[in-house]
Image (cartoon, rainbow, N blue to C red; front, top):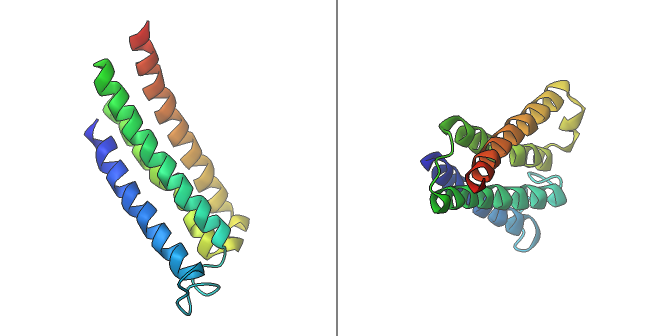
Length: 133
């Protein structure tokens, strides 16, 4: 289950990176970042929020499992961790290259990312729910 803590730490670093990048794109503008590097500021904010949520999910699931005295299966933890990076990763890419949504591999990547994340979360939730009954 420790992978959830490691993943959450990585996601928190990503959150801070997105915050600084957004700051340099909008508030303390550095030439070449706003409109140059960052093409879609709104999508960058979505990436930032998604990384925040994913890190909180990792921490919450870890804490809930510890409190309930259950162990979330390692594979479920890996699925959550992978999805925690790949889901917001879609928004990160889109912030830099908005037209990337037209490419088929991106649609496949996004669908697989959602599936991996969903399976991991449902698996972990079912373990926690199972503990309650």
